[in-house]
Image 1 (tube, rainbow, N blue to C red):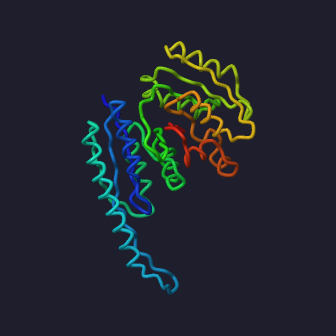
Image 2: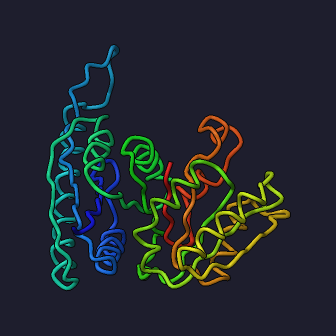
Image 3: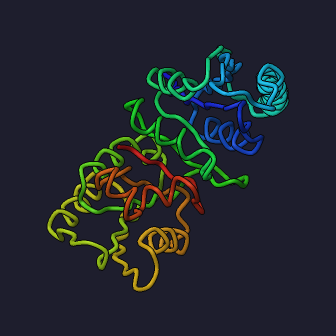
Length: 273
């Protein structure tokens, strides 16, 4: 049974990038997966402003829907050109959706697949959060550059949370192909139960993995920067982390690893909630 990876490609107000298409194809190729690209034709509902306005609402609506259509066409053309060289089986799921329900439709499609692939950026943060909370499946975030999706070394950001444990479970599809694992914990950010941490490392080693134990301290850096720096230094190809191990409200107010990763990641990152 082949894994099914979902690639949601927005077309309005911003279009998905060609780079995330290329990275998604590479990820599917390295993991024997099929790729399902969902591409919407966005419909903008009619608006009746309560007060007179100089804005031509009908013209704006037409321009928005035309932009969505043109974006969809460009993405499908790039996908067709790129996938012919990759050998990956690709299906395109076209659908119509009215604003503001496009992300909800993406999430419903994502529930039928093993994971969803998104490019990490401030523009895509709302989409990533919707997929993370509403699909029941993990997301894989890519940086805005072309990267190899062969995951020989997988780094696990471990804080002992339920979300981190779910992420480890969700990452098995990639860990099974890896030759080495790393368990990275930031020890000066919050209290880490050392017994639980060593139990994880022991369980992974009993499963046959070569596991590196990497405790780090953030000092003046953010925990996110410390984790990513340790993963890059250890030449990890994929970072695995729990999404919103704290409450979403707490991370919104105080910031946190998840919110940082959603907008900027230096290496492919799997998040599960």
